[in-house]
Image 1 (cartoon, rainbow over the protein chains, first blue to last red):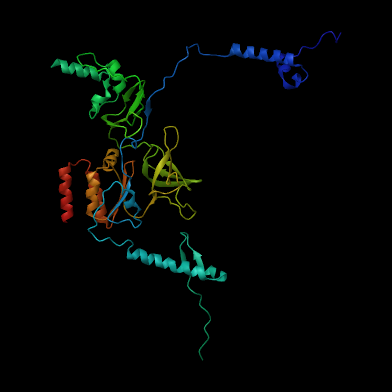
Image 2 (cartoon, rainbow over the protein chains, first blue to last red):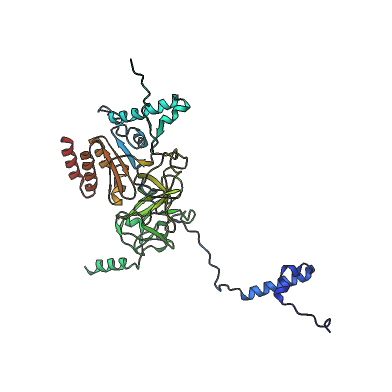
Length: 158
Length: 273
């Protein structure tokens, strides 16, 4: 009795991978086709004629760089910036200017003094031995300020 | 008397699009449609105008036209979105039908890719700085996008930065860098100490940066100074003394509304003192 009626397995179960290993190729193909049919019936599509996109010859740009030939935005005049990069940037745009005035000092005296202050520490650190490296500590900014020498014991002169 | 009014009303109502070529240098209003030169033959106004037959009309049919700021593509025509004067630039070399754009005036800056701007560092977060450029949101600037970037060599919060945008569209947060594609600074980076930052309209910046601008040349003869122009309407100036810096800032702000005669008067007065 039990052999007469086979338990019917659902379609979804039969579509699972482990059930299909035993099948032969024909039944596999049939199952695939059935699946495709199901998909195509439920699949939504637009009932419009195919629109042909014309190749447009207008390009949209939001930048003013293409429109107007603008100069580079960083400039310095009469040798103000010590790097002198700025004058060279626009050299091709400007005509050659005759230098009537004397060129101002590139670096002011204050800046030189400041730079020498830290220079002593940097050069000193280079020649200091490993044990003396503790004397040259670095600030938060990375400036090297030499610490004053420790006071040694002085022998009385008697 | 009634005729010109009706013609004007008709053209303003947008019932007939005008040819872009005829409107160059004139004021256009948002909503107007402009015809490009190729389309004039097909849709031109009927009338007594003789159109000479051009043999190669359709041979080189489509020429690439760039529509710049203030214009949009609308089918085959250009649609005006800002009010101002219509300008055109012929193509220098190679292909292309040139560039059309609207020369308008505004104070609010919208980030555009490739623009050089002055930004103020407002915050550090993770691997990037947040830089205020005057747009709707702060731009992000990576730690590594400076020439010779090291741990020591970094801007602090509150510094001024001159950089350009690499990403700037309406869907994403703008990103800027202080380095060009070769890895060199090229004048970008942290702007030094002192100096004064002030804001002007965007149109003035473009006017001052035009290749034949007299204002910059005259200003440069006054005394040694350094200027940085940001396309977002910000100018930074620095001179030897505070007074000179302030004079410079006032001149640049005021020269927008002065005629060239008034400007020359002021410059001559300054040169005397």
